Image 1 (tube, rainbow, N blue to C red):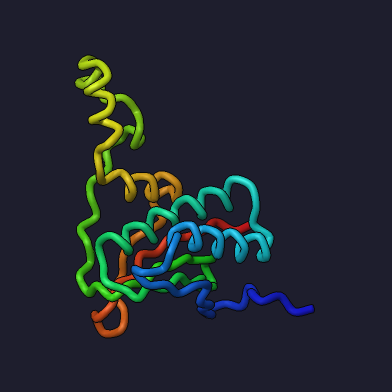
Image 2: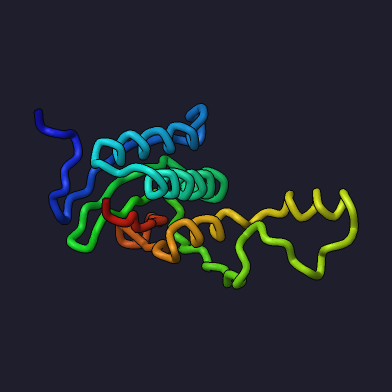
Length: 159
């Protein structure tokens, strides 16, 4: 039996397409990537990290860009790339990431009680920091289709 996905280089496979009206879109993106990576022999922490990172990229696309959206796997000579494409032509600015992790305690915020804790936990903007941590910095944005689309991409380490 021939697998649906292969390791042929310079090949792109669309895993899933969705719109802003698709129910549970981010959950479905996670499931599609998990199934594809499982079929390719990925497992453990690599699979879990990739699924969590694509969850953030799909959620960002839904929140900040017009659809329809597409999740793809790109097989290249240097490895496997997961892409989330949307119809926003502008590339976002990549924030500077502090040396601490996204959920580590900032010493300047150690007091304040429950209200300060809830404020810190509700802060937005941690998604790309999570992607950065999970991919060891191997991610980014690229223009596509003559600048009419944007792709958020992340590298997935080999099995």
